[in-house]
Image (cartoon, rainbow, N blue to C red; front, side, top):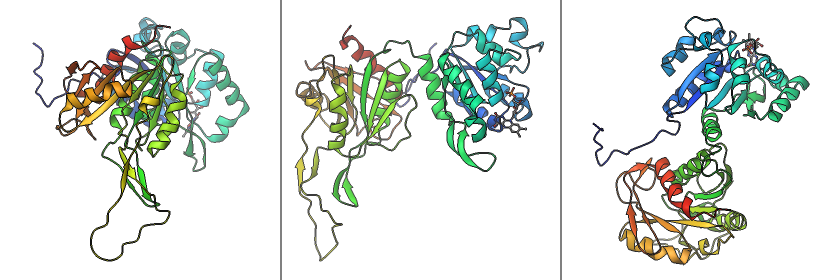
Length: 411
Ligand SMILES: Cc1cc2nc3c(=O)[nH]c(=O)nc-3n(C[C@H](O)[C@H](O)[C@H](O)COP(=O)(O)O)c2cc1C
């Protein structure tokens, strides 16, 4: 019997459900961070098999990973209980992605040479799955000619190198050698697994966040959009193989594997989107673009003086979505409404040139601004409305992409 879903529960599909990820952990001081990576991959729905090098076991216990993944951990080729002791390429064949995080200079060098004297390097050599290597080491070790040569070799072999990031290192020095953060790595795994999916080769532009129109040098008017919906669409498109540009007025952390263009005003957003829309396949305008802007922007801070009210003169902002044009461009508009949802969304479709409008009633609970869920209705230019159930914003993103796909050009 399927579980009953109450009206305030969303049906959500973890992004890595059904996917097998091999997480390699090597003997870096950053090995403790791999526990968080394992946990986040499991939370994203993946089946995670951890392979540790002998040096890694000096830093973290295998039991930590076994408890987090609910699976046996491989620490040697000759262990009786290991999947690899029966078939040494078992994990390689099953993997949808191999992520090595952290990767030592030593393992990096072995991978570049094809040395397979431990279960991790043997798995990498035998797999056809994408391999992501996240180096973590002292900055001088990373900058050394041999490590740089090895990185270059691996890039040439099609390995994805993630980082390292700049920052404070275990030695106390600051430099390039830190393991990149967990969210970035999970995003790269999702992107690598989805690279040949139905949006492979498609260029998708997503706008997100609420634009900020200046009043004076210290004040602006904006709206309650957080950008969560647009970011979820960008991640969904990335996970399906698209080349994604996220034009954002939000300060949420940038999703990995996506080109992020930071903007503030409607004019910034227009200037970022119009030139690139000519070559794009899909433009999804999830940003809450200001409808009004101060008529005059003071060049100095407006002072509080006298008694009584202060009035702000506003003028309408021109909608630039109708100006976004491209040979193959399909456009999807958003309508955040508090009343007459379908009629208002329908009225927006034709003037904007949208294939359909994603209408959402932002006054409903668990829908609209700031929430992780959304309940939307798709409205087409003929006025047909297709209400969707309450879903995670990621799933709303997938539903939009499903609906847009048949509109995209077949060339
Ligand atoms: C305390 C300590 C910290 C270390 N941290 C790193 C590191 O961050 N990056 C690295 O490349 N090597 C580091 N090493 C050296 C590796 O552990 C060593 O090269 C080892 O042979 C790596 O083996 P593996 O690649 O099989 O895990 C560290 C060693 C010690 C003792």
